[in-house]
Length: 412
Length: 139
Image (cartoon, rainbow over all chains, first blue to last red; front, top):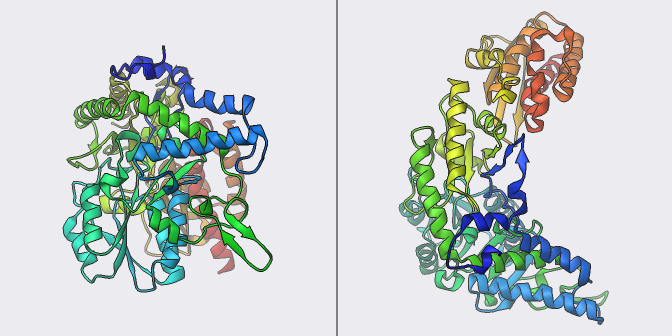
């Protein structure tokens, strides 16, 4: 029986049976996959949904008048409803499909950034952003003359509201673009407070939900987010599909991102007019199968339930912090944190740690985690990172600790 | 952990912990830098006396530091042409895992061929040295 049919009882063994790859071996050892924050593994339901669509129900969407196209369009558009439900958007028209969170942020920078912002306006980001929430704003700054300001984080790895206050002091800030959960420190940011803070000062807020949406129930209306972005592949769905949520009135006012088929109302050589959102922002044939896969992933996590997922991952994180603390230096100690733990070990480089763990079948990430400026803030050049998912077990965390003991022996 | 013994053998651990060619010399003829944007590792190579003596400043993993050390040993006294040949032979070793009897201790890094993502760590000091020698040639 699939674990998703038993939402009230979190049975991690049953969950793991839903993920075929978890029974694979690496270097002759049982795979211990602790790199889900980079990209998560896929449950059978996602794999089957995509295969089933290719085998029984596939054509281009929004174009054909034939049965196959209409059914495929229904399946594709049905996922828009599922995403709207997942994050409690007010309407399905507020959900734009993109390739990933990176493309979602670039879309906002390119369209909203170049029309709603003026030269001299400022954008604030934090010191713990992924490159995806830094570089698009730098590009906008360099092309368009907006100012980019960096709000500090505290030594614990939390938002420093004093610094934020300073950055907003002159009244020129029009957008706060900030993570909902750090991919390095595991910190959850206080998003409701941040949204209120930005709105009281006349700014909009964009939240990078790439990490958070996997682990917590997100409610964009309760947060009062203006923009919320995430990728499908971290949420147990396929790569190549991402989401941009924006409030309807904001999307209505935004010009298109890319031009082409599907995003127009009419085209002539003299002039073209744009479709209404969300299709205005979805030029060309979309990632049809990947979108259908994302729909299956959303069904899957909702059937397991976010309260059960959060409770399981909290227990994993508490256990990991306890047993890893004597072995390694853990970066960040936010009060509200999730299952992403970055660490360093005296005398051992993160790469060497990752290679030695890999030979024991344990997959962790090592490097700067697409957050080079944050590495500078933390005074390191790279870290190793273990990240947890709904299928992670206590035994895997024990295996990581045992693996790190062996790394210590090699580097002693 | 037997699989890793091949890579993390004592020569690599010893030279990465106690490098003998590390540091920036007061006088040098040319310099070159190697960066790995994937991981943030960086090596800076200084060339003295027409390339016959090498120093390095390294910020990175044990493999990269040991490679910079063994490179400095291996190229001491060689001409630029000989260094280029040595580099090509070394890159063949780390890409294929087949040791080359002419390369001496550089063969300690042959095991890196098992770890695709780590080959760059071993070759980065050589890229930096090549840049330094090019600068010297053009300079």
